[in-house]
Length: 350
Ligand SMILES: *[C@@H]1O[C@H](CO)[C@@H](O)[C@H](O)[C@H]1NC(C)=O
Ligand SMILES: *[C@@H]1O[C@H](CO)[C@@H](O)[C@H](O)[C@H]1NC(C)=O
Ligand SMILES: *[C@@H]1O[C@H](CO)[C@@H](O)[C@H](O)[C@H]1NC(C)=O
Ligand SMILES: *[C@@H]1O[C@H](CO)[C@@H](O)[C@H](O)[C@H]1NC(C)=O
Ligand SMILES: *[C@@H]1O[C@H](CO)[C@@H](O)[C@H](O)[C@H]1NC(C)=O
Ligand SMILES: *[C@@H]1O[C@H](CO)[C@@H](O)[C@H](O)[C@H]1NC(C)=O
Ligand SMILES: *[C@@H]1O[C@H](CO)[C@@H](O)[C@H](O)[C@H]1NC(C)=O
Ligand SMILES: *[C@@H]1O[C@H](CO)[C@@H](O)[C@H](O)[C@H]1NC(C)=O
Image (cartoon, rainbow, N blue to C red):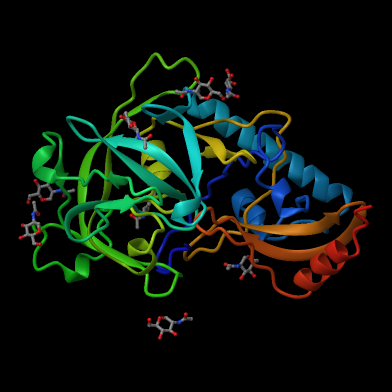
């Protein structure tokens, strides 16, 4: 469910990909391991554009320098406990909703809970709200009906509409004046899939992940989704979408800007469909790292894969891929597609 608007911002953010932890099986289910390579954006981070040739001693000296800069920045930023959602850090893969991963988030005063899809392919967090066209509930195969909560501005004492003069208002040109409510519209890659409404601000209920002792309720901006279309009316993300992308409007970016967490998050998806999500997690020594291929306009979690391992067969093959938790398919172009399918069909299962 990658975001389709190309008007975002270059944020030099490092996401900690939980590649190495034993509880993270998601990447293994793709059937290949990912190996990193230093990419062009590293030069931007360093502020140098004439990086020494790869493989030379000067190259590694430059890379060590880069690592020191990152470590220094982390220490200077101070340590904050990682945060997660109230009531819990659990995520669930739900078959009926397109096999996406969901979290139970609680918003507003008094708190209302929503089962939102977690989408690294888009930025805005939106909830069904003041609805013209929303999913109000679903019927299960056993005849049981589940009713979803719908966010209501009037029902939450901490709710406030976001005005057109806000820095997070991207559709300012559609505003009649700066003191009107900011509208939003997001179109997604799935055919005819969109959400439209206006921006609101309210409390997102968070808690420290490690000891669960400290509430960290935070005011965030999100979309009051009045009209949903396409896949959103047809099963996918029926109760809201939680954008985890890099732009300023995503919740991880808001938490970092408020100084509550470092600009990172981690998700682990287990093979049983259960998982975890944490904001402001810092890397552990056992984690693998890979840089993102950042573009100034609309940065995404775009990585370079350099090697594919199927069974015992190791192939060096370089291609780019985007981590998009909002789609349940892995798409590959040739030659990577041919190479992987050939390797899989040549596997000896005896
Ligand atoms: C987060 O997950 C861990 C297990 O990995 C669990 O022990 C902990 O209680 C969870 N924290 C919250 C706030 O749910
Ligand atoms: C979500 O959490 C709330 C408590 O905050 C709980 O009442 C509700 O049953 C949970 N919903 C789901 C679908 O787990
Ligand atoms: C909800 O939407 C209706 C139109 O669909 C609008 O008239 C009303 O002002 C909206 N409510 C709020 C609180 O924005
Ligand atoms: C936006 O306008 C409102 C009312 O006109 C004002 O109270 C508020 O401070 C302004 N916000 C910003 C970010 O300028
Ligand atoms: C997208 O939806 C339209 C209208 O429903 C349909 O005509 C078109 O073939 C669809 N395109 C794709 C790529 O599925
Ligand atoms: C996004 O945030 C960064 C850092 O706070 C800021 O420099 C940039 O101007 C913001 N971009 C927009 C479009 O608001
Ligand atoms: C993050 O870093 C801090 C300070 O270095 C350390 O105390 C903490 O245990 C780390 N947390 C995690 C989850 O690795
Ligand atoms: C991913 O990054 C590579 C290298 O910068 C670029 O060629 C490719 O177009 C990017 N892919 C997408 C979908 O942005």
